[in-house]
Length: 171
Image 1 (cartoon, helix red, strand yellow):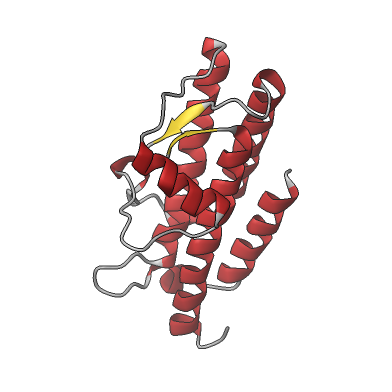
Image 2 (cartoon, one colour):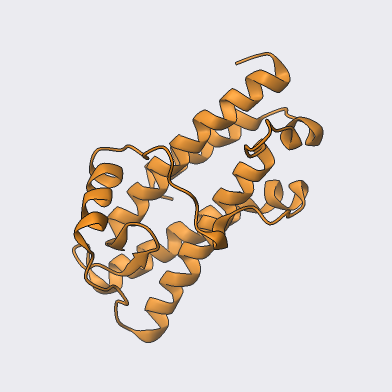
């Protein structure tokens, strides 16, 4: 696995280590629970894998030309490592209520599958080719897809740690 994604996996695991299903399900009104944050990440890994598998099946990148706002957001997220507040997750990656146990048992397999698919795309199309459109950022290369998931995961890891502190009373 890509070392940055492996470190992300370890930090996300540590953020929820020892939390019960009840603690994972606790939420503030209008906010996601830790379980929902994990499910959201699970869905993003699954969606990226699915999209990049289509690229491999078609045998050609499916990226379109990004708009100027998409380029600016890509620069902010991928180059500067910042997820702006107020961005709403696309409907397809919003939590759907999957069982906590399923998400916990499958999320790391989904992350590994995504990483392997990114690597296959990179080997086939090169590292400078825009492969697929992200629904908010637009067209991304393999390296940009990895970086996006690292930055996005760290953003949610901070949320998980805050939820852990509220439910467990420890860092």
